[in-house]
Length: 190
Image 1 (tube, one colour):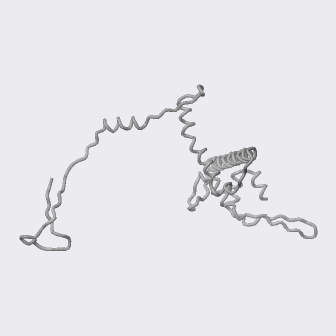
Image 2 (cartoon, one colour):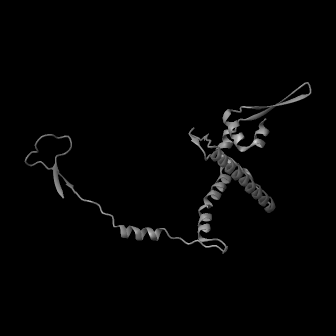
């Protein structure tokens, strides 16, 4: 340990005889990690119990399903968000609440399938789409893709008894996403 006495900041030169100096201590040392103790503590923290009434599951499969729960939770977070606008619906009848819940879960399933399909196709084709920051990504959320498709409208005109339909505001990125999703999706917009 080393002791250093210094004057207050800003004063230069040799200190006066009776001048009070600030004392600083400098400790030179090496930090050593107690590996045995750290390992013992990590083992305690890394343990948790998983239980299931499905005896056909191996421990590895059970852990995989457990770790996959966050995907389901993210989906329900989407359902609860303002983007889904469900907070503005008021139902009293139990059967209507159950029906709405079923529709919401079906929507979530379709949303998840569409997201999986697009991500799989992006990976297979080695393609990317821009994310919210404009950077290329192979794992976009369907919420972002739906946002990108906002503002696309269908203009229907009638002239001399003939009806003409035209899609407005389509950009290259929209056609790219639709082509990745498949011909059925492209045909909707053609």
